[in-house]
Image (cartoon, rainbow, N blue to C red; front, side, top):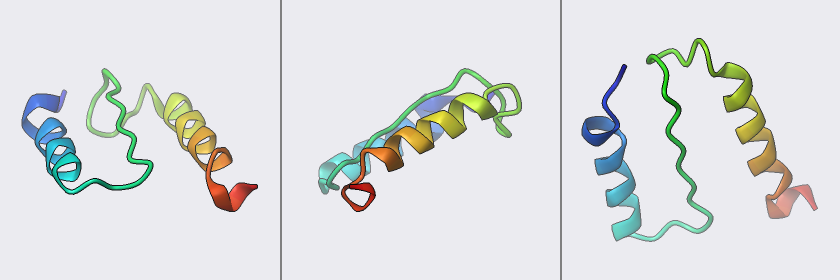
Amino acid sequence: MTPPEVHHEPLVEAYEAQPVPRLEHHVFPTDHALSDHRVALARTVVDFLDRSPAAA
């Protein structure tokens, strides 16, 4: 598993230091390829896109 505190959290902190509209971040307890969370990832992306202004 890729440790979020090493790879994910510093990136989120960098984006939060320079605010990005609608920034979301999610951590899935899985391997680097998201092999056992691909459906959850796809649903998360679809949900995000459904809420985007361009979808309206």
